[in-house]
Image (cartoon, rainbow, N blue to C red; front, side, top):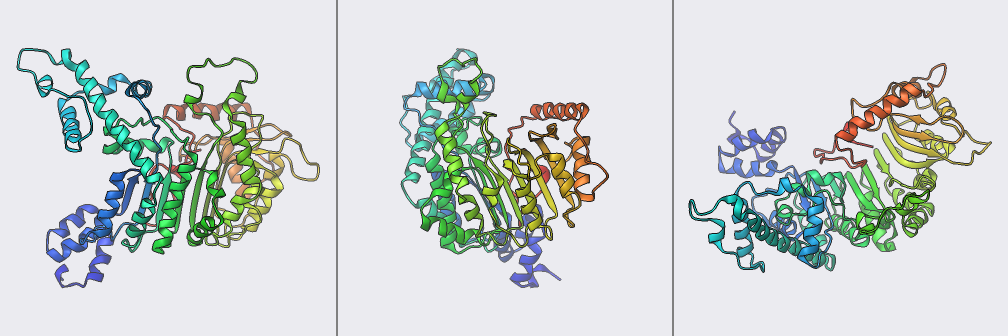
Amino acid sequence: MSLLGLSNEVIDLILESCDKSSIKAIRLVDKRLHKLGNRHLIQELQLHYNRESLDILYALSTSKQDIAKGIQAIWLQIDRLEEFKTFDRWDEKRQREYDEHDFLLEDWKDYLRAHDVAVNSRIAMPAIRRDRLVPAPGTVRKRDILPQLAKDYLYLCYAKYCQLVEQQRELDRSHELRERLAAFFRVPSKLSGIWITFGGGVRKCSTFRSATFREGLVFPNSDWTGDYDEMVRAASQILLGALDARIKPDTLVFGGLNYRFLTQTKQTMTDIANVLQHVEHLQWEVGDTFVPRPWDHEGSEPEDDEDDESRHIHQAGFAEMHAIFDTGRFADFLSSAEKLRTLVISLPDIPDTRLAHVDLASLVGSNRFPVLDSFSIRNVMIAPDALTNFLLRHKETLTQLRMCDLHTFRIPNPNTTTTWQGWFREMSGKLPNLRTVTLRGTFDEPGSPMYIFGWTMGKYIGTSLSRAVETYLIHGGAEVPLPSREASRDAFSQLRVQERRDRAGQAIVPEIKPLGWSFNWEDWYC
């Protein structure tokens, strides 16, 4: 039977199972099939915090071709741009961030295209003579004019950068992002995933690949996250847009969003809870407000003394983190997510080893999630009994457990299990449906040797010790596997391998997962 004889509903079902090349071929057959095929070409949408992305949202929400109908996931990389009042300051930062060899213009077409963009968009620029760019044959060699050519090109890039900064400031002062997203969210019939990420290693596959940001030489290795409150407001606008559109996303990912998100007005948090109640997969890699950025110490010499670690912490920001988490704001936030099947929590790294991490009990409280299938936790302080109680509350449903870089209390309590060996022994075989356990990083505590497992969640990264303890937790055994010097060397050798792979230490999953977000733990790095 020909496709032309089938109803629109049946054709939609067929197109859902086709790859993009097949969809493109089907679109060529008939005008009706062309329109139906358009709905299935875009399954995921990646946007940034700039005017261009808002224009894309408007175009998709008003298109008569239904090209946004089949979008199932949206990823917003909300990178904040640092403001530079002068070209010299911007250029100084560029020289620190870029390898000059990567910047040399290989083809003058790049410059001419950027120049045309500047002229068409009326960016204020110094006069640039075109005959300087295209010299007469034999009169001058390209390498002789490259320095001035590069300088002119940099002025164009700086102008574009300033334009992007101003766009962000305008968005900060308005509700336009919320309004555009609300209009867009009403179009896709199967949108299920919302990703909101800031900075981190994820920039390399988002911001750095954006043509608009590349025109402004937005520094791909920079991590400008100092606009803490503006970051929170942008994330809230996205979720409030989802609320306005009355959509029910089942996947929500926060990457780099700081904990001030939990301190918004009561009405805002209530509105966000109305979105969260439909979420089945929640991942939050928590950003911080206490780690100084590189520019905080620009021009100063590092101090070489025992208290040097304290220079890496803003005490007020650190106290703020504990005040927010210790008062149960995060547990209250989670309480509305009754449909959670996947929960991933990763707290900030703390450079000063003398300072305490956030306690797990204050993160999860007494919450119980009836269908929780997968739980991951990273960089928290553990009272072993509190971890035991949380896991046993979910023993009937929990099948996957991931733990990385956990710490126990520094003062042992004689009435509780205070060593990791004791905790492993106590939990062995207690979770009847557990199929997968992944242990990574360090598990330290005062009563016995530190456990050092592998350093990432990668499929091929792990140690003989981690595999032995993982098996012990699932199936039990005679004795708890003990750490050894050989196991530690194994773990550290793999850390060196991962460093060569540019390990960023982030818990952000580096690529969007459409189609209901079938979560692949092998992509999650600790």
